[in-house]
Image (cartoon, rainbow over all chains, first blue to last red; front, side, top):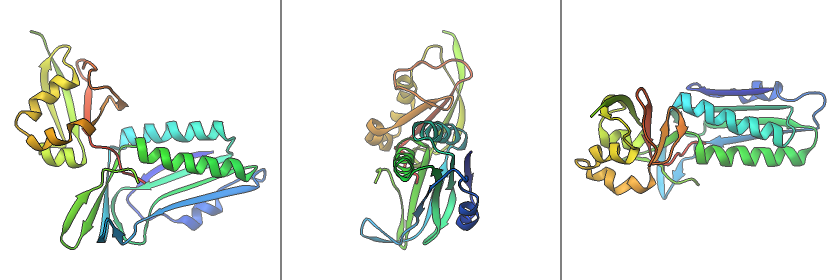
Length: 138
Length: 84
């Protein structure tokens, strides 16, 4: 089962987790990327994500489809926020399942690392005294 | 010289520098991304400073800078991505 969503609204992680996995899965991994209040030595007030949605969906689908096949996942959901994200809110959630944990961990790491390299989404950090587009891949 | 019509999309800092998110443009048939970019860089010095890190897509697929555009193509220009 594959689900890719881009949304402006906050992510309901509890609902997502209750629907992740099958009876054949002994491992369920949840990765959450969350907006933090400090970055590059500055206090961050909030984030704003811009997205090239049609291309982002294609790139995300390519990444998730590869991961499902490579690590025999039975389910994989990726939800990425766009627009304004407040401090403490989740900006991305990856929920996936597989029969064994080794595959789940590897797939989760691959998916988040590859999203940060190729999916056309851009983060802008806002501070008390201005804002800045983030262009590194940390 | 035959011209083709393309759509250019710009995102994030590139959008801020160019001052538009999307525009149609007529360019000579067979133009490469490099050649099209030349039209912008000449009067946008800020773009010149980041041009080596820019990424491109044609019709939503990542492209090399020497790729040729066809009539009706959508060229997107953007900085390194930073999602997640």
